[in-house]
Image: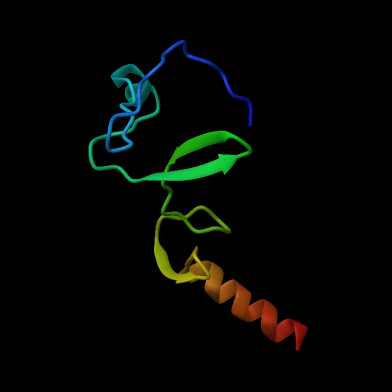
Amino acid sequence: LKMKSIGVVRHVDPLGRIVIPVETRRILDISVGDQMEIYTDGDAIILEKYKTNCIFCGSSEIFLSYKNQLVCKDCIKQLHEFKKIKE
């Protein structure tokens, strides 16, 4: 992960909010109502647009969530077939 400063400083408001500049939202295709995922790395806070894709293939056709990971039908089928081979 390579971080790059964009030269913008924002204050945290009394409710803990920070406004993401409109230019940054346009570049990163972040729209009103989008969900953001929050990570920490040491003393850094990382925001990332929340992805709702299969953890294995990236498909957006999600079938189930297993241990907070999203999995599509095709990958579930392949995992099931793999399990049969291993047995």
